[in-house]
Image (cartoon, rainbow over the protein chains, first blue to last red):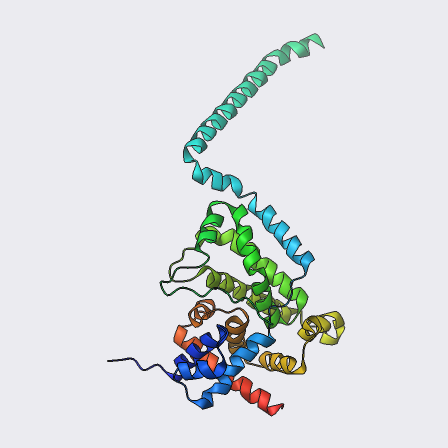
Length: 125
Length: 191
């Protein structure tokens, strides 16, 4: 069974043609609409002509562009990590080793200080 | 005045923004191409729905920051990038309108500069006919106004408008038909 397009469907098709630059009369006929629908098809073209995208203030556009660039940067390491998972593991391992060495050095230094503290107090009595 | 219409979505359903979206998902620095392509259209959508230059800028800014933050999650499964983008703009518009309702404790006369900004005739300096048409669009019911602006200002297809508004393509076509009929009646009444 063939599907008969509804009036709304045919109007939509005619409006697509008008937005594509066809004259309203031709678009109306091509979509199989009768002449009574032509004013609605023409109205679609009129709206398109009467409501252009308003100009965006250059200052606003530049400011938002800069904000987006700033927002894009903190995420860059994440994108790099996704692209280089092997390097991420190596970086993580080196980082963990560095933290481990640092903590060990701190613990040795603190225990050394604690051990020398009584002698220090005795000297200053 | 001739205006560049957004590229139509090919019958095969290939998103015309596919390459740029993929580039931006891999490297956010590539988002600039999508931003430049759509900033004017998103701003236009916000401006015609909010009627105020500053509110439209705020909503546009929030839209693009949200899109940049969520672009990794975008998958072209039936919806085009631009319908996804405009859906985010649509949600930001809803937030702006809610905020505006909460703020509505001071009379509108207290914001003369907003009222001036709200008159696009000042921006475009055009004829009465176009102004009457825009005033009639502004008087439409909300859902019809969204359809008219998305379809005729931003050049989205009925299917894309449906994806933005969370409605079927058929429902959008019916809304579009009713919106045009309402507009014709409004224009005839004020002629």
